[in-house]
Amino acid sequence: MGVRAIQVCLLVLILVGLPLAGVLLAGQPVVRYLEFPPVTRYVEQAPFSWIAFAGLFLFVASIVLPFVAMVLGAPRSARVYLMRDGSFPWWGWLGAGIVLVAWGLAWTRFPWLAALQPFTFTPIWIGYIVVVNALTFSRTGRCLMIDRVGYFLALFPLSAVFWWFFEYLNRFVQNWYYVGVSEFSHVEYFVHATLPFSTVLPAVLSTVEYLESIPRLDDAFRELVVVDVPHPMAIGWPVFILSSLGLLGLGIWPQYLFPLVWISPVLVITSLQAVMGEETIFSRLRDGDWRPIWIPALAGLICGFFWEMWNSHSLAHWEYAIPHVHRFQIFEMPLLGYAGYLPFGLECVVVAGLLAGGRLGRAGSH
Image (cartoon, rainbow, N blue to C red; front, top):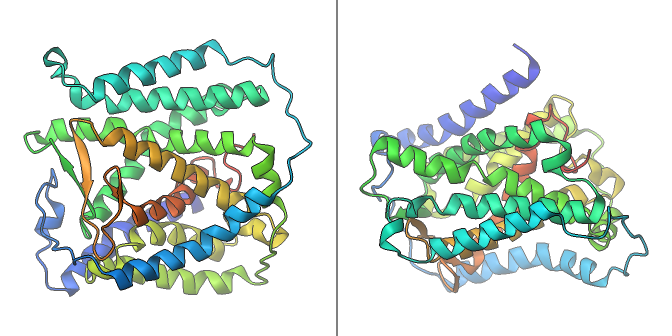
């Protein structure tokens, strides 16, 4: 078995096994965490706390605001990308049309569309993916969808598996749940869920590539604080142990460790890469290059905004139950919940890098 296969198997074992082990340690019945479809709500969420909200808000703001200031303060770049002919490609307009039609159908309740209503979310995101690739193509003359066709298509099945893992992790914290799916059979639920799940990675990776083509973002994050770790393996082991313990803790203290659903997986993967002597998404910080961190994080946040917006009035949709900080909702998502999309963007790039044979860093690079 190759190194990559061992890495993936170990990752799957950790993500699946450790939260279940936590449930066993907490003395909870394991069977309810394996329910399919997962419609039973058995985690009682803690009420809103101003102390917890303020603490988490200040923590997120202290990380994000300095980088926002860097982008706003970055001088306008003199670099100009050569465009094919300066026009938006025809297939980009086709994608925009798909978005508009599917969006309209998703937010209406036509009786003749009842059988297809739960499927409208997927074409919206297909259209989004096409539009973002067209924006990149019109700016640079190349894009993920056109220049790396095999890799682009492989992202769809990988994306479905990837998001099913997050659905599994959510069972231990139950921060989101689906409305309008209780009547689905096992097969119906799997099909209805897997189709939109398959668009997650293509959407985020396409957005990353587009953001990489914006000179101002490129310049803002290219030369920042140098973070040089002389011995990555020495750091990798403690991070691996702590992030694994975090996954274990999801089954024991879901009310307090729920943010680790978004943080632990990326730390587990990158720490494994570090102890194996491989490049990670953090490696380029030694040169002061923060683009592999903040551009995927921004892409995750942008996609998160559209996920929440298009979800808000769809027939089959998700809602949230987040302990301590469930307040100030934008669409269905509480304000601080959007912070989870920042590490999620990193996770998307890291997992897509595994598909590309471990080539991490700027996901849209050719």
